[in-house]
Length: 346
Length: 239
Ligand SMILES: [Zn+2]
Image (cartoon, rainbow over all chains, first blue to last red; front, side, top):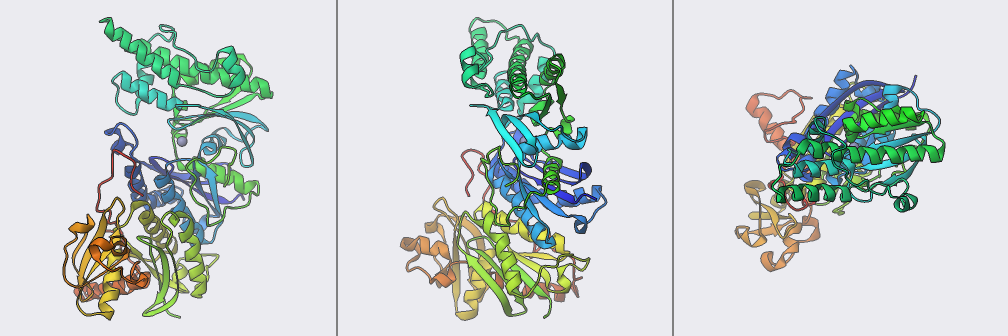
């Protein structure tokens, strides 16, 4: 029987704990402090850190309860030790170390972003030998080449400025929508014409594509949206919010999918896994599905609840590390707020 | 060996002790303001080993308590937030895993009680709160009579008596000659002693407390952090 791995996630505003054996998710619990942040229009690190401390023990107990298990059943502890907010990461890493110490079990400090990919194995079954992963959220937009989820992850490209989800939050603000803007812009966009406004596609001109084949840039797009809205207001015209949202979302999805398909072609890969909170975006899901099908590429996207931050993604990556025989982390590991993506296990 | 207590404090230095009654079986301490996440867990492992409390590979229902640690005591601050949380979440999680009670004591009380045991008269305990402020509390005969509070060093009420704590050493222009280094950081062994004393008092008052009942919320021995400051919602958070 595969070892039972308890995974802890606390990189941002979600406290997540889950139990995974092999590729089976046996129990999980998640608590979020997003409601406390919403009124500030952004994540307040100290508010998130305080919430992690209060939620950690109840969340561990709830995850064990949902699996009908006891801490004595746990064979290994995995924790997201980066990247993320230092104060938030610190609470999860300290709790994980205490469990490893108290239970005398191995500790695995794992990469949160790689966890967003690893969780798909719990949903859609074993990964193929090689695949590409696109991880998009409010904090990250990265294209990864994966030869082995626990030992062989290489970053091909990432955003040079804003993350995709971050650009959505900013455009949401421009359109007067509540924070976090992602889901609101998405909803509004569904009622608009995605071809109404030709917004720029960052780093896709031939010269940029040659220099930054797998990188993204969304700040120019965000500025273009702001200018377009300003011009509209200056002319005394009403802002067609749904068309702006739809055209903006189309530009983001287009760039993400175009670059991902280009990477598949360049690396001879026929499977793409998309993860991260922003993969809940409907235009991205639809465009990825249709263009990948046309190109003969299999696309795997976990259900939305496993795209946002949760403990299952960390337990999944920990489980993969244990099964591959990756050496455990030292009890003296720290948190790494800017952990490089080529490191699945610290 | 009887049932020992693991005591830890991360409000100033990172400090760990294992005590059995009044006897300190092992202890360690290091001052490393950014090192809590890295250093605390290995220090606990080493101090437990030196105290002769082996880590049990297979933790039974009775927890490690059967062979050694029967309770945990943790300093609840006040302190810079990130380091303080490392101590609190570690203590709470160890207690959950071992199935033993965890009790909290205001970290400044350790310095107040230690001074009270050796000296007559009142003492003010002053700790670094960063941002040019200090945490402080006043003690008479080892018992807290005022605070804990946070303020500018110059706003700490200038009572009679000694001043201890690392905060006093940081602002000699306000507090005068620095206290000896031995009176800078809370000693977790003193936290354990204070917790035992308060627990005894509670037992007397309630006619006996059920052992193994984790004191996780409220009350004198609760493990809620003493932040004393609201989160900073504008600039970057302290610590
Ligand atoms: Zn994430």
